[in-house]
Structures are given as structure tokens and as C-alpha cells.
Image (tube, rainbow, N blue to C red):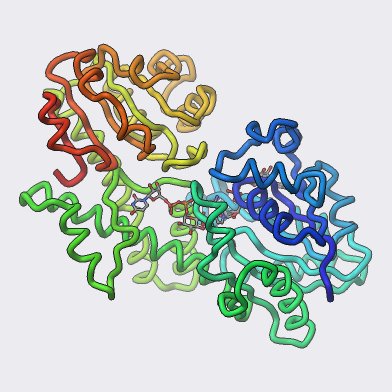
Length: 463
Ligand code: NAD
Ligand code: UGA
């Protein structure tokens, strides 16, 4: 089957960039991205592509090139489903906040809704692609909904998880390490796999396109995220030991990273990993393991999360202890709120939890982040429901200039590794602060010796 029409349900951090790149690389395919969120679609259609709802380096240029040529953003979900041969499901799969599996399992209500909508609308055979990250064996549930509520239409379910990281989404999509496609081992399943392989083959070498059975593909995605997060928790565990022993975690990371069996990536000690996926996917893995009675497997992976929570708490405790065991009414400035640089995404960002801890200690927090809006920061804090929205807004002052944000503060906490922070005039910032002035580098991006020479009392991760 030659694919000429694709629909993607979900115009978020995955659906938007992924479909923009498919449209750019496959001008012969019409790609329609649909979402229930009208504002989000309106923003994707903003005439000025700098205003699209997701900030990713290089994305606005691709959208400018392909939008309204063969890339469309729409709220007409049913029409797009009806017209497409292939439907990608890229909706969110957050951790459940209610009922069985609360706080652990993935909430699949949005996935089920998509399946029901596809079943209702489809009049011709379709390939349904799981792009969202899903628990292993979800394809079985999707197939059952499609086969039992549909109009006798034949569906093939493929698993094609996305491995892009935010902040580098465009380069990850243009040059992926691999594309993974899982499908049924039947001839129909293989035909569907081949049709999707042909789409990616427009810009990805065939030897990087891996095909497997559906369950391997689904489980590989959770496994990849669990392994990556485990590396961060491992180095963060060592960062605490470094602080006790005088070893330097950056030096330890370099020394072990040069062992080719270990490798150098994902060994950056930090205030803890954030983002919408690592925590939710590992919790989901833990839940799946428990549901099969594999308690040791579950405990093993849960430790990655426990370590991460500990690292965030340890960082806020260190701030309080260093500031003479009280931060009440002290101004503490956060540089960065996003969970990593080059994204406006703040989901599960360590900054939210550090702010929450420090506000509990009655600190006054000032924040500067180059890409995160004021409303987003406040709603992140409100979401924790630790205190009233009014108290949050009284405790958080948000600036659009880092120098202003730092003026008169007792301490600075660097919480996102934005490149611009390394270019600041730190002497000027130091001069504008209360003395002694403290600098807590949650990302180890500043030169400790240089800032200490200015007069800062410097505390990095692992130092
Ligand atoms: P997101 O919240 O940014 O986007 C999901 C979108 O789906 C939202 O705009 C929402 O309105 C829409 N939606 C939900 N239900 C819908 C429905 N029934 N019909 C139409 N639209 C609907 O989420 P995301 O970050 O893009 O993640 C999507 C999936 O991709 C998740 O499973 C996630 O684990 C996975 N993933 C995310 C990343 C990442 O970096 N964010 C990377 C790889 C995989
Ligand atoms: C991660 C994976 O890297 C992607 O492959 C995956 O597709 C995605 O999750 C997903 O499934 O959503 P993402 O969360 O966007 O991508 O960003 P990462 O670069 O993995 O960073 C996650 C967190 O770990 C960030 O807070 C980052 O600062 C932190 N981190 C990363 C460290 O603290 N140290 C490191 O060495 C690397």
C-alpha cells in the first residue's frame, strides 16, 4: 500500500514535531494533525510560526515550510480520521491520578477514546499506529475496541514509539538512532509494517529501521527510558558520595564514561531528572512488573525514582542548611524553570519541587526563565496543591530579566542548563546581591573556580 494521507491524533510535543518532519520529508503525503484542544490548534496555525505552542530549535522553520502545503492542523478529528490511510495516536498517557493503579499505572483513557473514535468513523481499512508510549500489550486492547465496535473494517495496529528528546526534537527526528516498528507477524501485519517503513525510508537509512513484533516494540520504549533514567540516578547517587569524600562527580563521570562499555552520555549529575516521561514510564514499568507478581523487578526499577526524589529534596535541604538553617523571608532566585534547556516544557521539572520545598520554609522565590511563561510557573505550583493559589502567587516573583531577578537576593539556584546562563556578567550579579552571596549550581554548568574568585559561596552538585 502506498501511503498518501496520514492523520495524527494529538498535536503535542510528539505529534506536532514528528508530523512536521514527516510532512517536510514527504511532500507527496498529506499530513493532518488534529487535537481536541482548540487553542493549541489555533496556536499551531498562528501566521507567525514563532508563536507555535511548542518551542524547539528549528521547528518553526519546518512548520513555515510545510504548513498549508501538505501539513495541516485542525480540530476536525472525525474528518481527518475518515480520510487517512494511517492514523498515528500521539495523545498523552500520564500517570493515573485516580482508581486502580493511581500514582503508578499509565492513564489510557485518552488512548481508548481515540480507538473508539476511529472505530466509529472508519469506513475503509486503516493502519493505526501507536506513537504514544504505552504499557506492553496495549495494542491488544486497542484491537479489541476496534474489532468489536467498528463497521467490519480491517485494522492493523503497529507500535512505532518515539525516541525524540525535547530540546533536540528536530535533529532527533531528522537523524534518529533508529526507527522502531512493531507489527503482527501475519502477512497483513507485515504489509502494514512495510507501508510505514516506506514512509520513514524517505529520509532514514533502511538499516536504521528496525521491525519487531508488537510487544517487543511496546516494551522497548519503556525499557529505553528506564535505562536512560537509571544512568542519571546512578550518577546522582555517586554525587552524594562525592560530597562526603572530596571526589568530584564531573571527574568521576569523565573517568568512567571513557570506558567504552559504559559510554559518556547521560552521566551528567543534576538536581534530578524531570520531564513528562521518565518518571511516568518507570512508574508504569513498576506497575506492570507488580501486576505480573515480579516484586523484585518492580523494586529494582522503583529505586530509580526514589533516588531522583531524594536528589531533589537533598538540593533544597542543602540550600536551607547552607543559608544558616533558615530561608524565611530570604529572596532566593531561580535561574531556569524548564525541565531542561531549549524547551518551554516544565512538566515534572525539578524547579517546581525545589520551589515548593523552599516556599514551605517561607522563602521568597524569584524566577527567570527565557521560555517559560508566568502563568505556566504559577499553574505548576498550584497543581501540587500544597497551599492556596494566592499564597503561591505571593511567594513567586517572575522576571523577564535575569539581572533584575537576582538583585537583592541571598542566593541563586541554577535549575536549568540554558546556555545564556554561562555568558552572564557574574561579577555584576554578585555585586547586586546580599552578602554573603550563595550560588547553588543544580546543573554544574558554571566554572566553580571563577565564580568563587568573584566572592560567591559556590555549591554544585557533588561538590
Ligand atoms: P502532550 O500532552 O504534549 O500532547 C498530547 C495532545 O493530545 C494534547 O494536545 C491533547 O489535547 C491531545 N489529545 C488527548 N486526547 C485527545 C483526543 N481524544 N483527541 C484529540 N486530541 C487529544 O503529550 P506529548 O508530550 O506529545 O506526549 C504524547 C505521548 O508521546 C505520550 O505517550 C508520551 O509518553 C510520548 N512521548 C513523549 C515524548 C516527549 O518528549 N514529550 C517523547 C517520546 C514519547
Ligand atoms: C527522554 C528521552 O531522552 C527520550 O529518548 C524519550 O523519547 C523521551 O524521554 C520520552 O519518552 O518522552 P526528554 O525527557 O525529553 O527525553 O529529555 P532528556 O534529555 O532525556 O532529559 C530528561 C531529564 O534528565 C532532564 O531533566 C535532564 O536535564 C535530565 N538529565 C539528562 C540529567 O540530569 N543528566 C543527564 O546526563 C541527562
